[in-house]
Length: 473
Image (tube, rainbow, N blue to C red; front, side, top):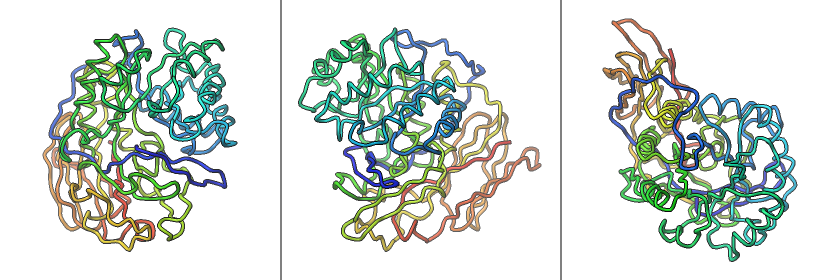
């Protein structure tokens, strides 16, 4: 995410955050461990807290409804995946009329559900010139019993903020302390990790934004170099390390103000490959916390939450008028469901025994070579040619089976072992389905809602989002 955009939702100015990347990476075979999941982790981080998994939540766009009951639904959904709380992102506090009352409703819902949250100050808009707004925000919401604390200190993170022109300690942390709020500060400050550590010695930990680590290498390799570097620096300096992980990224839109990366993809995210491979890497590296990016950033296609949110993009795009995207045909809950397996492994230190058979599928709606009469004027998504036109089948099984994939007019059988296995094949136009066989008998079958076609998305737009679904049995 490199900048921000202002949009209108229901007549209210809201902020859409921006990152840049697109489809996900292939993996071969990973066996499940022999230890069943324990609900209470025995592994603790450097600060003595149990390993916890957070999810980046965009305050501007509630995933279900802007109500206590809607937030309760989302939080219970997240808890079912093993997520412990939200890292709530907002770039506005006093400059709009919705952030404060919405946060009050979210805090109420969190208190009802036993869910946790902390604030992630997005330093791309109001807060840049108003550190007092950060102070007001934290002192307002950290009174909630659901606000996450470490040894009594209120946890605070950021999206950037390393170059705001004022001193964080003098302008935010000390004023909060004078109000009775000691802060456990784990920001994302961009730049070289060693320079960040030297420039900001007062922080309690480090977070970074390389959730799409193709950025460190070529477009085909998931490179955990930044994770490893921050883990080492944190260990040396006695700090905690919070690592990012993300299932996907696809962005193609523009608006006001002009976005730095409106139409960009980094890496070939083959199916669920990025999600699977980066989780495996982080489980080995052992960060103190993990933050999933994101729950509900729909414009950037990094969401794992529900697709019931009502949102749109307004404003002229290269003089061509409003552009609207619909995510209702691109569910991502398969990422969240598959993520449960890795969250358990991260928290308990070993891969859990598979207790329910599941087969997941991941594919796009049209080819990387598709030509669209795109009204944005942005043209094809940059780096889209790094992708492939394949369908990916991720199997998480208790015992071996045959997974039969029908893609268009082609049928392929995969012999799949127990545990986690990824298979892929070039897709065929038309409907997509899987059938699972054991001992020659069908035990599961599903035809998926989205067909692969030569039809562009939402009024002839380029869209490299992925369709993700699964069948359990």
